[in-house]
Image (cartoon, rainbow, N blue to C red; front, side):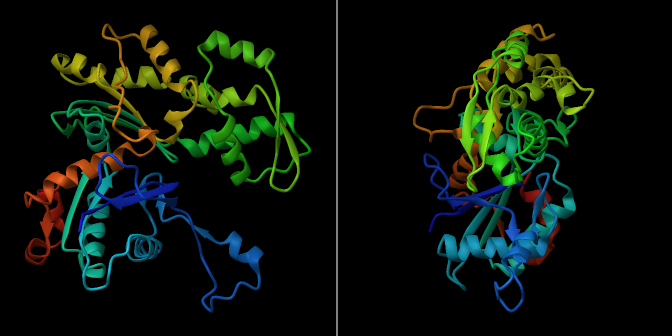
Length: 361
């Protein structure tokens, strides 16, 4: 049986057996609904209101909910059998606290009785997915943005940057903008998420963005409840906020300048190798026009060496940026488990959860 690879994000959990040139077989929402203990659904409105987020800003926050979610994924979704559990590889968000890694290991060996465990950082795995071991990842997740330089398969943590903004903040900004032009329409967060994924795009540059704010073609979108909403210039605000964080009320540099500043703290002999192997990941990175705008901003940045984006190999699945860490994990699983580089139950019994820091680095 192939090893299972799990990439648990704040919004979506990607899971499947390690087949590197295929998309993960399960992509499901991470958020869960807490059901009444008797299992009744008499009061649906209350059941809908009580949601649980096992993963917040990339890190596991509710371990009981995470256990329930993983139980569903492994036994129901992927068909594991009790008493015959296989090997598992998890993707680690940038700078995961040691305690979180140890708790995950403990959960896997003591509750799920896995036969083998491995974890690797998402930045490294996203580079593996495009055939690189050195480069820099710009990961725009639902709850955070991570910029991580990687040299020879090792994240340069001193130079890495994490920003506690992500798709959530972009959705909220989009909702505000839509509310201004559609004051009579009542929008749920779910509505806004769907509209954002369907309509949001990136202007070619700052000048083009300013033009869209003055005049822009409008489209009508019918919501599930029958309300009709008009979408025009708002669609460009989502992408623009990544290059002009002032739209989010932040005094910060745009994402390309943040990348350059991150890499400037690494030894200068590595600058070219890192900047010329930049990989964009996360659902937001697949927004229409985002890659082109990123590349255009790169030609205007303060660095003597311009960042350039790595194109994924043709044989990789479409929309690789949405689950590049999972694909990289599937590639790595094909190496670490057959070569016995993973953690075993014997390792865990001998040393305890802390062995993860020695075996998975």
